[in-house]
Image 1 (cartoon, rainbow, N blue to C red):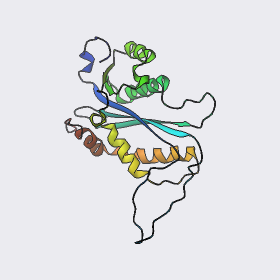
Image 2 (image 1 turned 135 degrees about the vertical axis):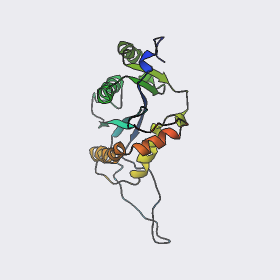
Image 3 (image 1 turned 60 degrees about the vertical axis):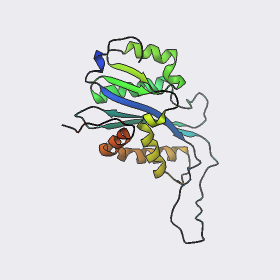
Image 4 (image 1 turned 90 degrees about the horizontal axis):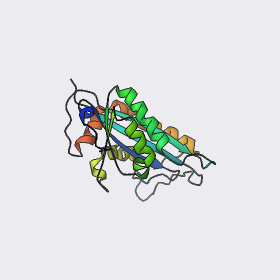
Length: 201
């Protein structure tokens, strides 16, 4: 937990799990149906550059519908363009989540350098009235339900064929959007970590 503050803000707060992932133009491999002895070949545009980064939050609270909040960041390898999520992008996402959820947040995430930087710690301290932060143990992806989002996403973008990094970002958004309307699936990701979910009132 960040600092030695009172945990009163945790009472009635949203439990929010956060994680980041990314995808370049080389698609993940997958299996499909094909005539026997004929290996299907899909031509993809992997020669381009860039990367789509994704930050996602699974937000749970007893009596409330579990939510997925996410943001994407497209890196075109341009000068001064951020390569991924940094402190500025993370703080903007957390501010948006706080506004959308309408209540305090107990945030659970890993020890990514951007998460534990002096700048991020200072920002967290400045928002301690609605934000408490807990860090996951090192090398414990099985404790973070957002890993289920990444697994689900990979299955939906297997062998994609897009013309560039901007099209890839659109594809990823289109695949993530339906998950926001599947609280049952999001709850399943949480239950897989060993936590229990209360049914909405």
